Picture 1 (cartoon, rainbow, N blue to C red):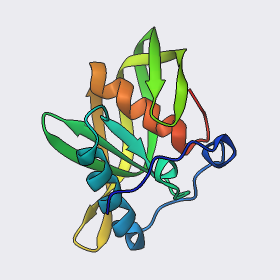
Picture 2: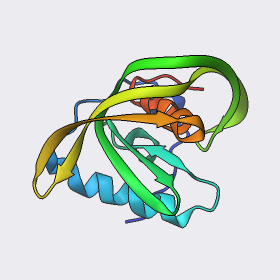
Picture 3: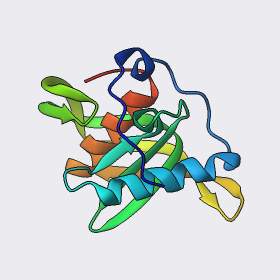
Picture 4: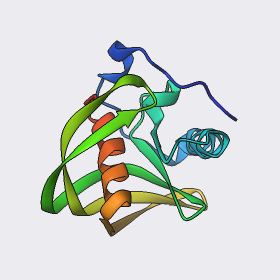
Length: 138
């Protein structure tokens, strides 16, 4: 279901609770919401009003969902100017060009541990979403 984007900084600054397989509907809401927005490439669950550690990102026309993502390592730091659908300003933030992320993927009705390396713009988007899960606002 398509959800409205949350702008309440108090809600957005809360650390997300761990996600479980029972949060599959939240993941689908993130997918539906990203697909409905022309200017959206990444969303965290708290941006649609759910305080769970779930991030969805779009890459090459497909939307992928990360449950309980965590950055394990980052390489090639740089400064980026980022905007956010939940905030009206653009901020300068430190990002890594390449990040290794641990997460869980919903396979059937179970969460399966995964690790993936992201690069360039996708890495930047995933880091932005993980920051949302940590209650960090850009």
